[in-house]
Amino acid sequence: MMVHFNCVFRVGGAAMLLSNRPSDQYSSKYQLLHTIHTHTANSDKSYGCITMEEDAEGHLGVTVNKDLLSAAVKAIQSNITSLAPQILPVPEQVRYLLNYIARRLPVGADIEPYVPDFKRGIDHFLAHVGGKPVLDALQKKLGFMEGHMEASRMTLYRYGNTSSSSVWYALAYIEAKWRISRGDRVWQMGFGPGFKVCSVIWRAIRSVDPRDEANANVWSDEIDKFPVDTNDLRHNSPFYFSPN
Image 1: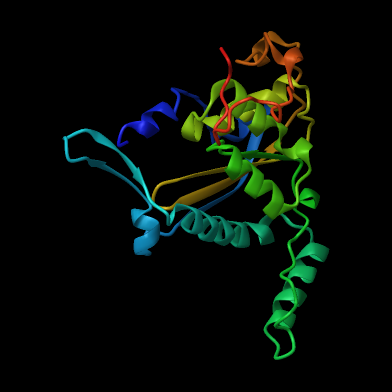
Image 2: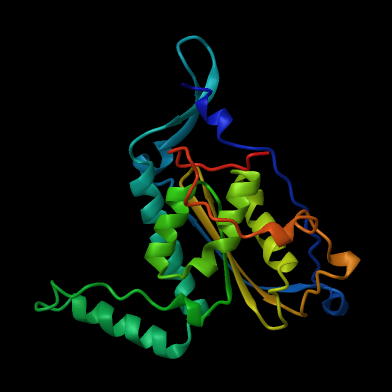
């Protein structure tokens, strides 16, 4: 069982060239706007929910315990709370603040927490494709439509869980689909052991034309075959992979 999780992950890789030279804005695709990093290792449950260790036979592997889900939810909520003021328009921030105050009044115990409409602050959401349940939970929590999750779901379907590089496969997907227009804001969210969560917000400096050979990527040859319906897959595993 210690090596079971070796079957979950697939090899992936991505490379980005970053620059702080003003002159490079004319040749770059994106401008980095915000980065929010959340680390909850001060909690024993968060720190110990995913660990690498040897079993009784000396096999090195990964142990995941029952605290993973609660640790992940806590870290993601904290990350989103820190990110929201950076990307949400003022009306959404006011609604959230009023709801927060109301729930702390003596008569506010039954008031449901207000979930901001993040669709008003970003154009594309690219989540770490750790597994189908993770994507389902994020979609429900953030109130996103299926279209906002398409890039991550198709990345999981075709490439599996490539860990942190998966958010770049997802970005390549929306570029190949000709969905990046000048001014678009892209939200990438990755997470992992610790428990840690990182959100990055980019602004598209220019539209990305997939017909340009300079913009070719791993999806270019097969992008017309996607999206596919992943609801009819025959197995019950929480992870779905490309049949190839």
